[in-house]
Amino acid sequence: MGARYLKENTMKYVFLVSSFFSILAILMICFYIFYRGVPVIVKTGVFDFIFGAKWSPRTETFGILSMVTGSLYATLGAVVIGVPTGIFTAVFLSEFCPKVLYRFIRPVIQLLAGIPSVIYGFFGLIIIVPFIRNTFGGAGNSLLAAIIILSIMILPTIISISEAAMRAVPRLYYEGGLALGEDHTGSVFRLVLPAARSGVITSVILGIGRAIGETMAVILVAGNTTLVPTALTDSIRTMTAGIAMEMSYASGLHQEALFGIGVVLFAFIILLNVALNFVKRRARI
Image (cartoon, rainbow, N blue to C red):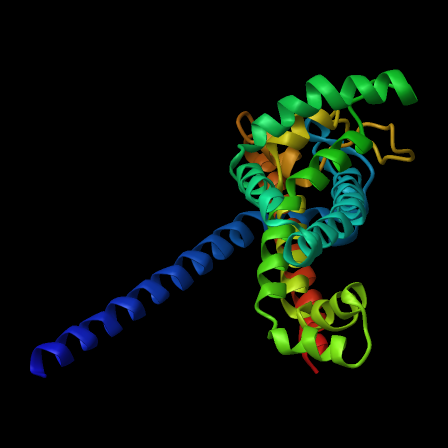
C-alpha cells in the first residue's frame, strides 16, 4: 500500500508540473507578444493601426485594415462553406454511411488532417488558382482561392469532432424518436444532432481557429497585396501571411509593427473563443 500511495502521489505532482509548465508557456508567449507589439500600437494610435488603409514600412506608416479584412473575409468564407459541409459529412458517417464505405472514407478524412499545409497550398496554386483565373478572370490568386483552400483544410477537424460528439449521444435518444413516430432522418436531425451540439460547436471553434491561423497555404494562393478586397477575385493578404512574409527582414519599428499585428490577431482569437464558448454554454442549457 505504501508503494502504491507513493506512486500515485508522485504521478499527481508530475501532472501538476506538466499543467504548470503548459500555463507558464502560454503566459510567456502572451507577455512577449504584447511587450513587443503594444508600444507600436500606442505610438501609431489604436484606431490608425487597426483601421489604417496604408501599410508602408519605408515611411513607417502601419495600417493593417487590409490584412484584418483579408483574414476576416477568408475565415468567414471558409466557415460558410466548410462548416455545413463538415457537419453534414459527420452526420452521414455517424448515421447513414454503410460500413464498407465507412472503412474507406474515414481513413481519407484522417489523411486530410495529416497533410502539411504547404501541400494544400501547392494544390491550390496548381489547380484552384488557374481554374479561378480561367473561369472568373483576374490573376487567380485571390480571396476566393484562399476561401476554397481554407474550407478544405478545416473539414477534418469539424468532421472528426462532430462525428465523435454524435456517436457519444445515448442511443436512447434515437430510439425514443422512432418510438414517438419519427423516421430515421427526423430522429437524427431533431434529436441526435441537437443533443451533440456542444461537441459540434467545439469543432466549429477549432475549425475557425485553424482557418484564421493558417499561413503557408494562404501565402501561396491569396496574392498577398495590401489592399482591401472588394470582390472575391481580388488578391488579399491575411495577418498571418503579413507576419510570415516580412519578419525575416524586418527591423526596428517595422518589426515592432509585425508584433503589433500578432497582438491584434491574438486579441481577435481570444474574443472569438470567448464568444463561441458563450454560445456553447448557452447550448447546454
